[in-house]
Length: 81
Image 1 (spheres, rainbow, N blue to C red):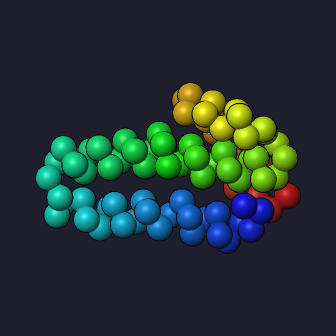
Image 2: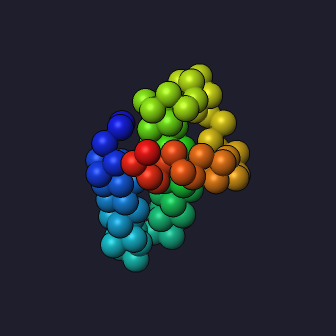
């Protein structure tokens, strides 16, 4: 996922959708959705971008679940360089 616009769309859209339907779903389901979004979905999307750019290997995508690992790759994730 080298296209920065597609990357931003891929991680912002589900978060916005979750926020819009937050009060419409039961609290347990909303919390489960938030946890899945933060720890599973975002880790996968960020790992996929880093893997595509050649920063990390595909087998190391799971390491982005560890708190603070995304900060290590901040420049590579959120800029076009």
